[in-house]
Image (cartoon, rainbow, N blue to C red; front, side, top):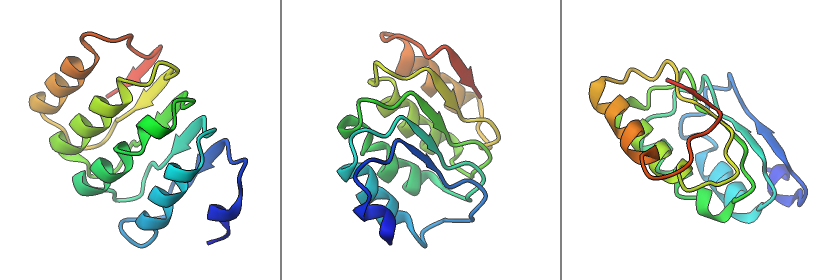
Length: 126
C-alpha cells in the first residue's frame, strides 16, 4: 500500500471502508511508522475489540494525536476500554468519539476510569 511510503501523513481518514482485518496490518504498520499523525478516523469499519487493541497499542508512538474517531464499529466494552486506556495517555488529545460501539455500563466505567487521573479531551462522545 502506497500509504506506508508517505512520510508526512497528518490526517488518516478511512471511514466507511468495512476494513475489519483486510488492511489492519497495513494500518498498524502505518501508525507505528508515522509519528506526526494528528487525526485518525476509522469510523464505520466493523472493527472489533481485537482490532481496537492492536490499533490502540500504536498510540504511544504517536504523541501528536489530537482526534480519534472510532464511532460506529463493534468494539464493545473491551475495545472501548483499550482505546480509552491508551488514548488517556495522549496529552495532545482533544476529541475522542466512541459512539455506536454497543457498550454497556462496564464500557462507560472503563472510559471514566481511564481518564480519571489524566486530562480529559475537550470532546468525549460515547
